[in-house]
Length: 61
Ligand SMILES: [Zn+2]
Image (cartoon, rainbow, N blue to C red; front, side):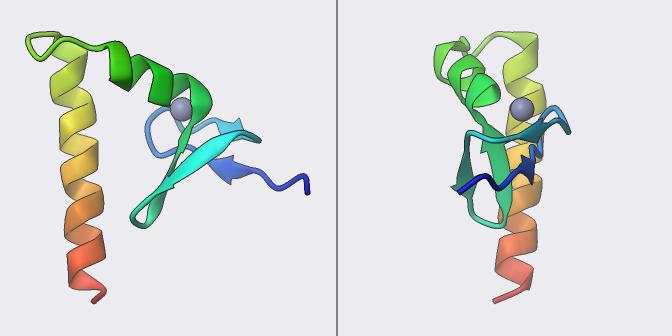
């Protein structure tokens, strides 16, 4: 299988990704997220995107 998905974090086409709710997160971003500190500026950014995913997911239910 050689499917690609557009990462919802970096917008890159990724071959290795995880599905989170209605979106996809590439392997790179997933690794970044797992190493981020809560007080990192980027954490806030990822948090916003994840919240948006949740919102979309809940609205579509
Ligand atoms: Zn990504």
